[in-house]
Length: 343
Image (cartoon, rainbow, N blue to C red; front, side):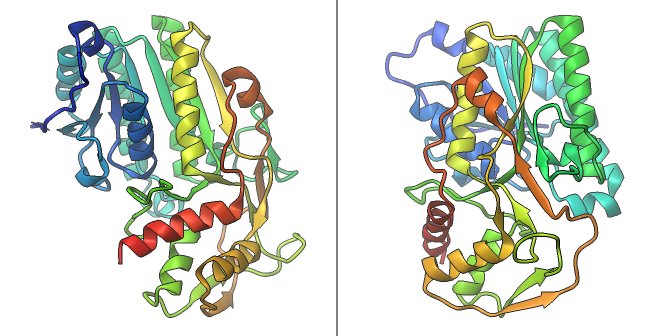
């Protein structure tokens, strides 16, 4: 059973415009909602397909149509695609917590891989032409050099990464068999928020680094736990490539333009190509918030690579992607503005 909520109508909207609707799965979630907002503000007609298990209806700030349904329901997907005349699908829906995937792998293979097969079957059967997929750097596992380029060996170390890699392979095979063209984007560490603090990150539980730091600055956490200070890095803590969610969202619009211009299917890293250590992020959070919240050091977590940085030259060349917020202080400041608004 699915529920449909009102759709934003553009001025002078025609049936032709409606036939170019974009269906965004998981569009009420953190990354999806930023992409939906940018799509709407660029003049696209957008419908969101989301079961709201981790998303929020109020993240759709331009009153985009919300189809409250699950990807396990292939009939609901097909009905939405047919009714809206969808030719492009952007797929964000899925489970994303790597440690949870180790303890509950079936959830990840069911929710990520199996449900995506439902979605792709509906796309093929309904004449969808373009597909943009939310993948992850977790497909690489632990690169020997700490730097992953688009062609690095894919050796995921948890079911989350494995399920995303499965989808990439399924998507490639479907594209080859049925002519569906796609862009798969492998994200590195996404953070930040809309610069007007209208939407932002609100996972529960929160497993990313920056939101807990800001909650500690607000007094909602007593301290922050730092997992491991003996990694082979300059300050002993893990290094990651943090990317502003607004730049990541813009990459999806660039991917859409690329596919609409008849670009061939491709898979691309999305990152800045520069890493920051956990200690560096903590220091910037102290500076941005003006609060010296306590940090407690403990043992490493299993499976954390010492360094994971993107080599992401190809996306700039292929899609013309040009980041605007490539600055860790800006990322933390925008997240802090959103976090304070939520108080």
